[in-house]
Image 1 (cartoon, rainbow, N blue to C red):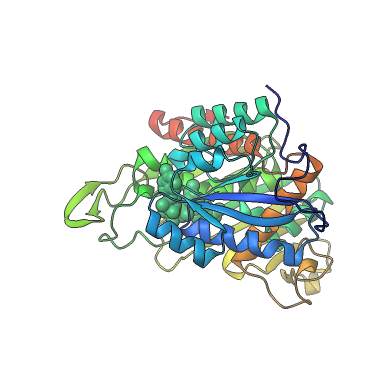
Image 2: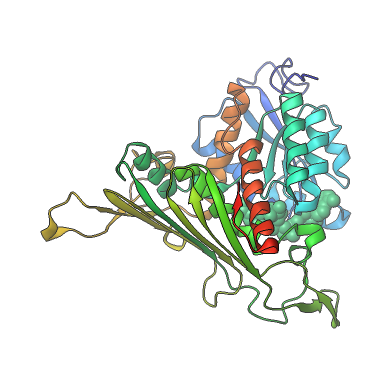
Length: 394
Ligand SMILES: NC(=O)c1ccc[n+]([C@@H]2O[C@H](COP(=O)([O-])OP(=O)(O)OC[C@H]3O[C@@H](n4cnc5c(N)ncnc54)[C@H](O)[C@@H]3O)[C@@H](O)[C@H]2O)c1
């Protein structure tokens, strides 16, 4: 079946003659952490980017009426509903933005694709590879625009790293990609169970949640992985039940995951994801070492990219710290004068700006569901590797 994309139909029902641009009606499912980040981005994006549409925060969806209605007011949505099928079946809606736990992504995305909606889906794409494949099939069969929200690609300093690599700054050979995503929110063994610690709802732990982001950064910056070997650990195996702390529940996912491997280019990879690194809050660090240069990034100092160039005279060689806020740097020119730094929320605004442009151009943005599936394939290969204590070809 080939669907007409949302922008193929005549201007939408609510569009009046005086409006210069067509209106893009957004429905967002899930209103907590990512719901807040995405709502902010949908509200802000038109303030900074010249968009082909006016963005209407049409409907927010949750399960609990009181909490969803409260979120509707606070986050600036026009309507609220309490069953996601209502937004998927609503002909006024153009875009479904999925911000719910991982086990719900596949069912909502597949139904959204069948309804002809453009889809922005939070990462990881799905709970497992089989679900991810069925999601990709659904968007390919229906031809709807699709994107997975690996927002760290759109940190200006990270996009700058990509640009410099594409221009050949590293030289002909890349030797190493070393990446770590470290948090510490599970160090407290009294931290209660959540959907994130249950394999049935999350798929995996730190692995699918945060390893997924640095695997995607590896794909973005250096291309596909060839083979990997992995190990996992669950340091705290039982945690208090959220609504009854005297009862303990089993944690069924990893607290930390490690992977070494190789890219198809021959570069070596070394990745780690952990929720048990005391003092590390949202610490995404990568270093890439090539024949002619090295690049280093740390999300906790996200406006900077460090660059070492081997061609510089030995007497003044060293890492320099580029503050990626010039108008010539990716995305930065949309915001403030140089040195007026950006934050976490801008990564979502940049992502949504590119997603909206993709709806107009009818070309999938990157990362699409196809890219999300690639990440899922690496995630699943790592789990297989640990189970079989073996190297796995991707
Ligand atoms: N891009 C990122 O950096 C990033 C960061 C955090 C989370 N995430 C991803 O975003 C997704 C949501 O994570 P979160 O941190 O916002 O979780 P959360 O627990 O803070 O929020 C989940 C929301 O989904 C709602 N929900 C759950 N089941 C639902 C259903 N069946 N129908 C409608 N609503 C439902 C909950 O009520 C809640 O509003 C996850 O897939 C997660 O991996 C991405």
